[in-house]
Image (tube, rainbow, N blue to C red; front, side, top):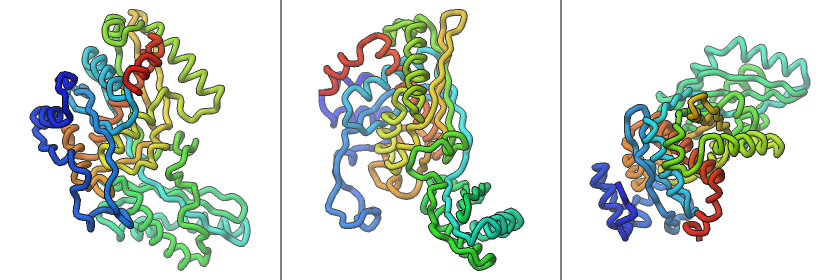
Length: 369
């Protein structure tokens, strides 16, 4: 679908609506929800973000459009080019593991003896803790907890499966119920319901290593001919830029993101589909990998260890964001995460190709001003 030939947003909305079978005319309105259903205090209206569309992108033989809400010129065009390269290469494979949404309270004890007493009690009462937590919601399951003792402080990281919700409200309520139980049974007092061992809305090596929310992987093999035809560079040049930028550059700078610009696509997709934008910082974590094959093709993969998103609750229930979710052609949180991960790979591929080609500044001069 060539949307560039259509001159107005109205025409493009109509075209996308026909292609997807989704009535999206309400996207033109600034605020279409009942105020009582909007989770915002002192509501005075709504701000508007430009909404573009990239794709479709082929993921395991299925095609999906990629909605991106952004004010950055060239971003949608770049992801769109990456989608074309993906499609010409037969599509991508996406894999997922649910690590669970976490909440990490901190308890303060008299000292190490009581700290280790609390650890022993927790380990001995897992079933009771799990049962207590799961009384708070039929859509929540406690999957595990981890304990870290530092002197008089005991940190506990509870991880939950939250079904279709991103789940932080659910896990906060459930963790409060657990805290009440612990205080009642042990006499140890909770210092803070959130002790930063979660780690929520912050970059951290713990989330990078252990995962949080959903861990996502995607991969593709792209030929020399597709690289030259669509990305306007060569596989060996693209590989060299990946090595010097994403691996070495990230290493010497101490970056937690060994990638080009995961956050660009994550932020735009989150805004479009009603996710909590503060979790973009977690989505910026991750690694892009590449390998030159003997036949001249390029193996290309992305790994995102910390994707917090859902399809129910919060901003995902807003009418326009719900419509945008439908544009992707999926109806559950796992598949929505897969579409976003595919878009991240496409955007990463296109950016590195632009750097390899030397066209980044030219593209931003043309589209970003």
